[in-house]
Image 1: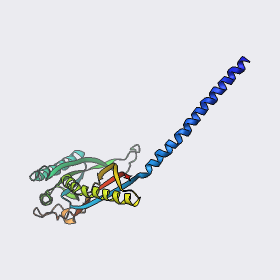
Image 2: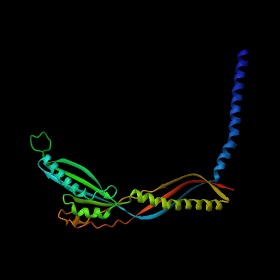
Image 3: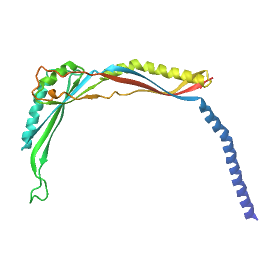
Length: 253
């Protein structure tokens, strides 16, 4: 009988605990429902503003290749070509206006057919290498003229871009338009949903990064015999700068 009393007591205690949990769960359900209902006055929004800006950055990539039987000789020829180009480019170099950057200088073997008795290994028949020089900046006139004076390297590609200064200036001018558009949408949508106003919630502002535009150089500028007075034609075009505003607002009565 004593065992039975203890067992009954434990059963009642467990039932009581279950009941308490059940009551707590029932009590929490309306609170959760109210919290979810409170989110119906939150509106997600996005807005953007765009402007066009003339690209102010010109980038020329010069390159050349050499080949021969001796790796050291090929490497020396490439160094001489790069040094000659750098000597000419340094005459007009100026930070931010005409910046120079020597690219990769690489030399690699060329292989021929496998000869009998060579243990299946292909034979090196010669060496080939390449070198690059990158010239970029905002002084498009100086860079375009330099393209005709560099004779040891040929133009591999031409690209136009937007400098950080020009991009930030454009963003500063257009961000106010994007924010004004965001606010206007919030006001209109809140009224259409039957609210009298709104309160700004979480919001983020970011700008798209304009991509550089490649331009194929004319064939006559790829020849090593270009005239020293002949400048590369420049047509930079325009870049699009877009500012995006994303977030949510709380609509108010």
